[in-house]
Length: 193
Figure 1 (cartoon, one colour):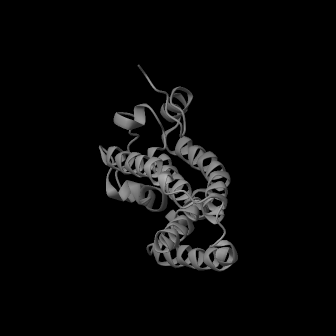
Figure 2 (cartoon, one colour):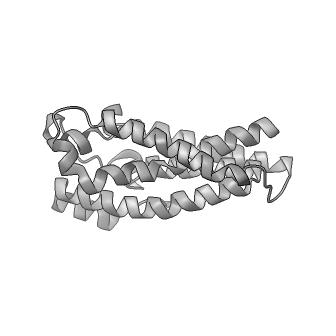
């Protein structure tokens, strides 16, 4: 169990920095597009530095348990599966380059199109929902306070990041994106029966 808790903590460290990574990109998308060389040569090392910083900051809390119950791994397993399913559905009609943010940083060098079908007909940001499911799975399963704190941090920074991403997508896709945004929720999908 201690090994699972450590893996959960590290997984939450990485997941919690994803919104911060994207906050480096979306407000400065034009800057990154103007660079000749790949911005990932700068962005990826900065993101890895975030992992180290968050790890160092959260070390004191890595052993603090809010609860200890092995039965929590059952709902955690369901959340893990939901996250994996969301990742799989997100990839449909969406290239790995798009998932990796290349249109944001490379601009016109890649074909850009607004995808509004499949899972994206129910939720605009299914990958972020998948990340949330994975973080919640680790939080629920481990019972670690640090995982819950990192999940809360990711929710706050993720909300800011989604607003910035929506603004950037509206700039790129105009009225089509405004209409899409007005009819499809950002992260929590509408369940249609």
